[in-house]
Amino acid sequence: MTVSRWERVGTYVVLLLFAGYALYPVLWILLTAVRSDVPGQGGWHPENFLTAWTQGKFGSYLGTSLIVAVAVVALSALLSVLAGYAFGTMRFRGSGLLFYLLLLGVTIPSQAVVVPLYFDLRDVGLLDTYAALVLPQVAQSVAFGVFWMRAYFRSSSTSVVEAARLDGAGHWQILWRVLLPMGRPAVLTLVVLVFMWTWNEFLIALVMVTDEGLRTAPLGLRFFQGRATTSVPLLAAGSVLVALPVVVLYLFLQRHFIRGMLDGAVKG
Image (cartoon, rainbow, N blue to C red; front, side, top):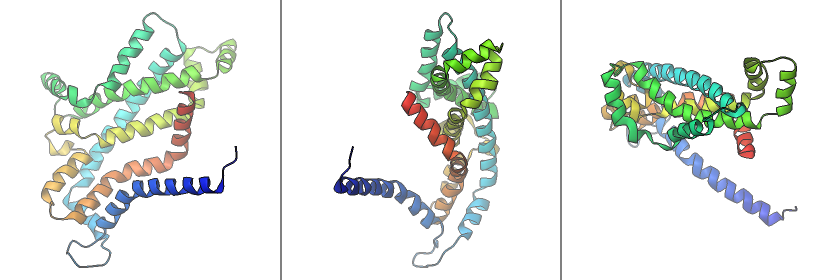
């Protein structure tokens, strides 16, 4: 199919408009983070990041977020791979019903369950603990993770699996030595998505935690806003500090992430 010159120009114009629309808030936050707090005073002020780091106690908040995110990603990825392999390659009674029950976790928002979840965790004495931050987010992430990994295992090459079985490989060997190495983009895409959702989670941390030592980075930014309401550059610098780990992780894994998303779109 041939594309005319005007169609190509129109495509570039539309893409540039969307790119500008997406990048404008990011550039505005970055430029605001390095400007002076005094109106009318020019110059660059990168020291705003150090001020926001010390005044906002972002070192502690980022450490808590990192512990929670790593725990959620590790547990969610392990459970999703195991359950996705079972649903994608095995045939057993009730598998369809169990799978659709798991999918309910994708459709139910956290706002609908946060209140009963609070009383359940209070009754078992888990409020103000890392478990109160990790377990609810693992449950939410596994619902999507099982759906994601099941799609990968169902679309994996049957000839490779049959060849492994003829060589005497069992389910564990087929999973860990054959299918999982081939599915690295799917697993890394799941890791990036779960890490991003966990890092940005605000409501669960707000309800389940009152101890300042267990505040996550988004929650810490909210309380920092209360202490530095009049300083827009410091708030912008704090926002950049909170968002930076997700951006760094995406830059490291972007090639696998894009490949995994494209494979999922084509196979889905």
